[in-house]
Image 1 (cartoon, rainbow, N blue to C red):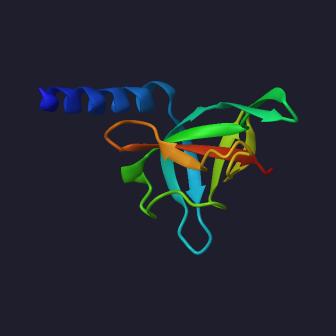
Image 2: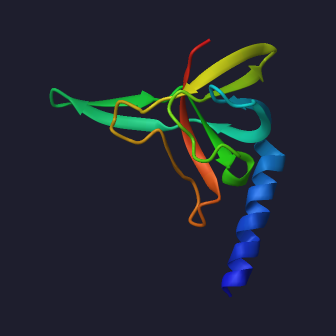
Length: 121
């Protein structure tokens, strides 16, 4: 039965990339840039400031297959460049102000990361 679930997860991952993936360039200082397919998204964060609830949206998240990121796990300062509506846009990995880490696993099998990004240009 677990083999069936593993096959289903692999199929879902491939289908997600095929249906919603975009070509991006992932870069890290001192490393060769990688071209990979990532699925863009967005996370809603909530926090409380002086007793007042506050809802914030992150600039952008990317779902990235861990096997595609040959540097190892995502690191603060890494950048993803994507062409959005004809404009080259650069995002940098950041830690959201809500205390959430800069990235987290997006699936139970730990094959995909959800990376939180901030637009830098």
